[in-house]
Amino acid sequence: QVCKRKCTEVQRCTPCKQPRCAFAAPSEGLEHGGVGAGGGGDGGGRGEAASNSETGHCHHPVCPIPSSSSSENFVASLGLQVLSHLTVKERCLCASLVCKYWRDLCLDFQFWKQIDLSGLQQVNDDLLVKIASRRQNVTEINISDCRGVHDHGVTSLASHCPGLQKYTAYRCKQLGDISVVALATHCPLLVKVHVGNQDKLTDGALKKVSKSHLRDIHLGQCYGITDEGMVALARGCPKLQRLYLQENKMVTDQSVRAVAEHCPELQFVGFMGCPVTSQGVIHLTALQNLTVLDLRHISELNNETVMEVVRKCRKLSSLNLCLNWSINDRCVEIIAKEGRSLKELYLVSCKITDHALIAIGQYSSTIETVDAGWCKDITDQGATQIAQSSKSLRYLGLMRCDKVNEETVERLVVQYPHIVFSTVMQDCKRTLERAYQMGWSPNTSNSS
Ligand SMILES: *[C@@H]1O[C@H](CO)[C@@H](O)[C@H](O)[C@H]1NC(C)=O
Ligand SMILES: *[C@@H]1O[C@H](CO)[C@@H](O)[C@H](O)[C@H]1NC(C)=O
Ligand SMILES: *[C@@H]1O[C@H](CO)[C@@H](O)[C@H](O)[C@H]1NC(C)=O
Ligand SMILES: *[C@@H]1O[C@H](CO)[C@@H](O)[C@H](O)[C@H]1NC(C)=O
Ligand SMILES: *[C@@H]1O[C@H](CO)[C@@H](O)[C@H](O)[C@H]1NC(C)=O
Ligand SMILES: CC(=O)N[C@H]1CO[C@H](CO)[C@@H](O)[C@@H]1O
Image 1 (cartoon, helix red, strand yellow):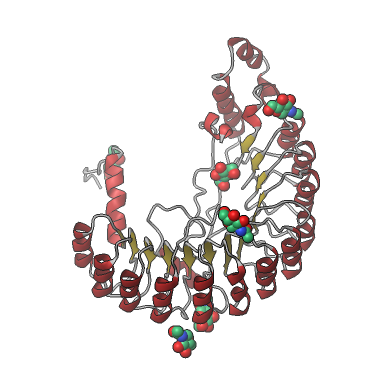
Image 2 (cartoon, rainbow, N blue to C red):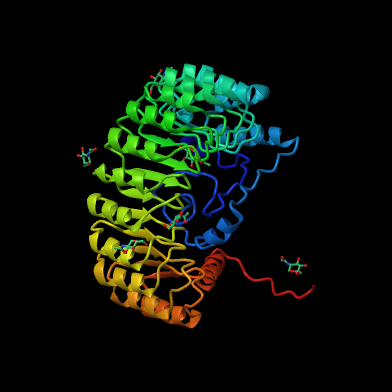
């Protein structure tokens, strides 16, 4: 955080926003539901999910390779930012050592405790080695999308920074087991490892990590991981609270069972797109503190299992069942009745009709967010009745529910101002409104 604040001018790879769709590249956190893989809660985009699911995946926009001069720009802009925080004497010193920026600028220990280098193409092993040799107090580092960093750099960092607690390295496909093993070996305080989309990772790394005190691990789209590694991880990390997997095609029910049995503190669990079935999911009923469960698009899931999880996991507050046709009205009714703590329910592209929405309105006094996008059988009646009868509802996703008339939604927006209704039209309107508020005005010139 600290680094980010001080380096706001640093050239970043801004176009690297996560696409929000059912098969999106992994991103931070499980706290956000919806169809986007953990995408933020800014309303838009939820419904695009199902359309992307038809093509199987969506492409993560590739960061543009910076121009040759941007390396200097990067250092210069970082320098300017940092200089403004230094004393005159320090500034003179620094200014006279322009080419030694990395060594001389960062005199403030605090400055380097949490380092977010994500998306900076200029970051390479040398830089990590320098940071590591100068600052041994690094507690958090994020090198997501840093293609110039290799196992050597991470190993050097790990061996010099025994206090490292949080390591984030999404989409660093060049990194392999060596870096994770080094972290596990040298950093006894390590609690968070987010390495989504590192397909060179194998079970070997997980076996090493399993001797640590991990609480939070994200291995989405690490295609080399199998049950063997997951079982070792589960056995070795009884303190695990967050586990996120996505499209790990060799992770099956055996892993689900292992984590349910060995990691009783689990709160956030996701298995989106993994070959996981009801036989595994049923074991999650043992997790007393489970609050967020993401079961999007898993191989097989029956309604009875879902109902059992909702009954047993009394703290469950967010449940994501998108993209499964076995989730029907009756199932949603039970969820609404039994989910005493449930606040978010994601049902995009499930086999539900108006009855499901009506049941939520009638039986749940806790559910605030319902996303029923792409549920093509939903009509005005369902949308109207849930808005009318629910005391708790604050968000209703109706993207591509084409049987719901936009005029009806317009009316609901006026009638129930405390509820955000999400349709293509409503989302466009909100986007425009925000743009106006930020000073944008339409280009009325017609010189085309
Ligand atoms: C780490 O930080 C503490 C203060 O928070 C400081 O006293 C110590 O010297 C630092 N250690 C290293 C190796 O930088
Ligand atoms: C990188 O990690 C830091 C700290 O964990 C986090 O605040 C930041 O949002 C992350 N950035 C990306 C692009 O993931
Ligand atoms: C569940 O959470 C409660 C309250 O935070 C805590 O006291 C308890 O130890 C947790 N149970 C497990 C099994 O982690
Ligand atoms: C669950 O699904 C099965 C198969 O589709 C169906 O026969 C059964 O009635 C459903 N149970 C409930 C409670 O809806
Ligand atoms: C407005 O649009 C016209 C043509 O579409 C374009 O030539 C012009 O540069 C635009 N003006 C601004 C201020 O963007
Ligand atoms: C992704 C998906 O659709 N998974 C399952 C949803 O439910 C049906 C019916 O039970 C299964 O056959 C699918 O495999």
